[in-house]
Length: 259
Ligand SMILES: *[C@@H]1O[C@H](CO)[C@@H](O)[C@H](O)[C@H]1NC(C)=O
Ligand SMILES: *[C@@H]1O[C@H](CO)[C@@H](O)[C@H](O)[C@H]1NC(C)=O
Ligand SMILES: *[C@@H]1O[C@H](CO)[C@@H](O)[C@H](O)[C@H]1NC(C)=O
Image 1 (spheres, rainbow, N blue to C red):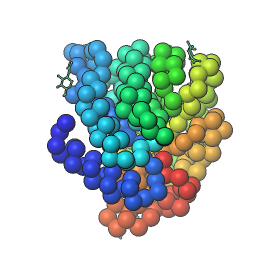
Image 2: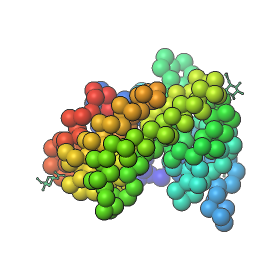
Image 3: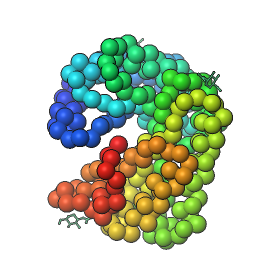
Image 4: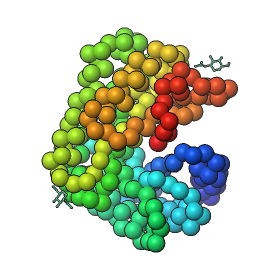
């Protein structure tokens, strides 16, 4: 385990999870845990040994984590690299087995989430079927407004028919889960609206509420159980001002839950 990352982890768990009433979800995945082929696709299984050390440490310290997610953005064509649905399902089963082993005797066991990526019909379908009940929540990422620099960003945010277009993946995932007949539920694992960090004075301003208030409402219509907003602090879509930590308008649109 790299020492720097490990120290950051101790800091996060101590200062955030222990002192706030928020429950956190954490993703475990790294390109170093996989062998990457020449075409950018990962070869073979996920090496879970670093994740196991991290999860074991966290569990033994008594830090409450509500879910461990196998992520991040490797589904479909992936961002940078990708993993086949079949392999990802098998890795998800490994993570669930790890969970059963580490949290044996614990009253509350964290759930397993995945894939934390963009919706791709075939990939998501195969993934949920193959991972069976090892996967407890299927997580989808949403940046449906395009890049933050888009010249028509504000028009899109204010256009109801554009916003409604975001319901298609919600509907598809609901159908996939229904068809699989498993107990897997659907989450939005990360949503910042506009990628490449959003846009200053748009995705952190009042106008963004037209996108943000529409999203969880629409998501709940299609049975999403949780909606995670990117970010609390950071990028141009933070709920808090990144320098002063004063809440931006979307902060007041949050429900009482934070993950
Ligand atoms: C898995 O990762 C660990 C830690 O980085 C390493 O020591 C081990 O050799 C790896 N195992 C395989 C099969 O690559
Ligand atoms: C989960 O879904 C898959 C695919 O439909 C099926 O093969 C498996 O039996 C299901 N598992 C349970 C426990 O329902
Ligand atoms: C954040 O606070 C700084 C300092 O008051 C201010 O200049 C900036 O415009 C704020 N950002 C937003 C998005 O309101």
